[in-house]
Image 1 (cartoon, rainbow, N blue to C red):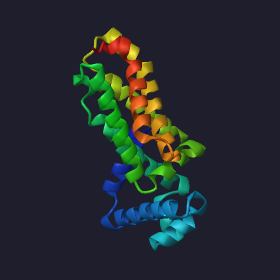
Image 2: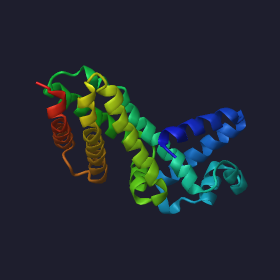
Image 3: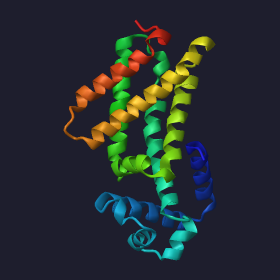
Length: 213
């Protein structure tokens, strides 16, 4: 299931739920985030989440079949926050390479903030790579953002130029998110330097297509 499909399904499910059920789901999400933040992934299980949320295990299973389903939806929320950073920018209006580099640096900086400021976001970022059950949602998010860059951010380009962007957009997304992972995993790195160099590397991918001056 893609991240867009999951979000649509989740929103529809929340709409159909009564107020009490929505509050219960919110408690379960919060309990899982508290456990991940304070105790780590090894402490996360359905009974622990239910106990922290103040509900019974059967109540947990009425909302999620297992802990991975809960982690999937939490990951979807994190990835949606990160993806929104890119979708809020107007890359199509940039005409100079320096401006492109600076805007890319800002996007990386805000994506980093969106990850760190999301409770248990750093732990979820690690789990998205470590757990096979979450691999598809991570890859789906990357594909969605690459498609967005081609279709929306650079939609004004001629069709032959846009076709060249598909691989470049995917590489840009991978470089960007790898940069975020480096910064959250290794706090000794010079954040400003890493973000700047990553932004320049991403800009180089588009040199022969965007023809920035």
